[in-house]
Length: 198
Image (tube, rainbow, N blue to C red):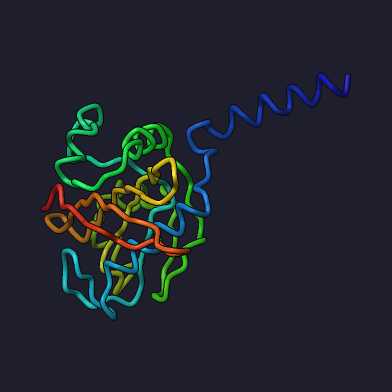
């Protein structure tokens, strides 16, 4: 009887929490995210798409794939043109990991004040018609919203590929692919490629 109740409880809990949201990002992914975000900033200035001073970094708590191209078209050739030094296996791992989004928590190693905001809260703000005005009321001086993909790694775990998008208004935002390499214990950005801008 106890086994039956345990099984029923597990089935109910699995149905309440969608399978797509039960994946967590790894510690190595957070190291990559932190390196990319740190590289985007010089002091308190966003270096890749705006020059607005910010006091707070807002990061969405759910990863997403990019919207620049059809996901199926993103293959080794597509990324190889962008990143000539791309290691074999990185794209395959990137595509496999990005089939299922991951929930992000505040495990970032950043020197700038930041907050991880639930996807549902962001959707609620934008669904209410307030759009960016509502966002900036809640997060003044934030400079916008950052959304990250899952990270794809080389088999040797010394190269990584990630997508990052930054939205700051109706016609303000960019999407980038970023290639990183690991030197010792630290990830460093090798090249960033912008794939869309508004």
